[in-house]
Image 1: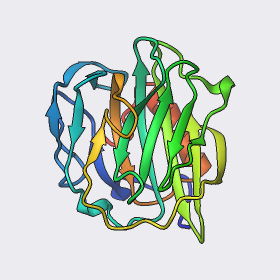
Image 2: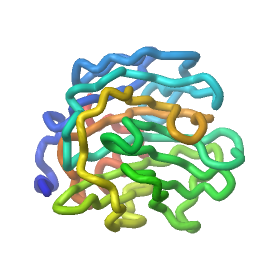
Image 3: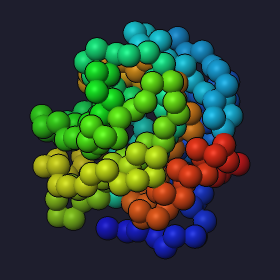
Image 4: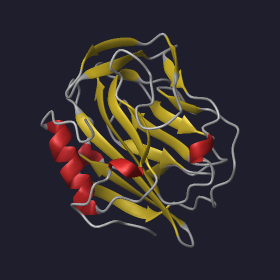
Length: 220
């Protein structure tokens, strides 16, 4: 498990970054996306991608730079704009093959992780709901030594951390999808979607969330 000290420059550890500044370009790597039925709006830091809940998605195909990564972190700002029934997926990468699937329960606002098996792993309890029409910062941190451990952060606060039962990461040819996945399509907005090739520390997660919720771009 590699967690770098709080305060060090983290930009070099971002391997893909989608700011959604009226495009789906990867501003940190070479995984430029392909947008389907995406529109753009005014986000919290800059622009945001708006997903319609049915056909909207961003795909960047077989993202080779992600294959085989063990310790990693995904962070993004998200806002749900209507109440949803059931669960929807904010992102998905090679479900049951390489990484997993992040889901939000529309009825409770709690969020879940489905790792490389069939078990749903709850990351946020009922008192950490996604609030309707409010931006919230989400971080999913994965470590693997010798078992997969997933930690979930809501607005920088660690809400849950436990061994998920997921298997070791494998090579995958499945696309990385934002706004679509194993269960449903995202309905709402997403901004500043980043993938890190390290496990961020709790202090770094809190600092990143605080800055972005204040409208500060951590990687301008």
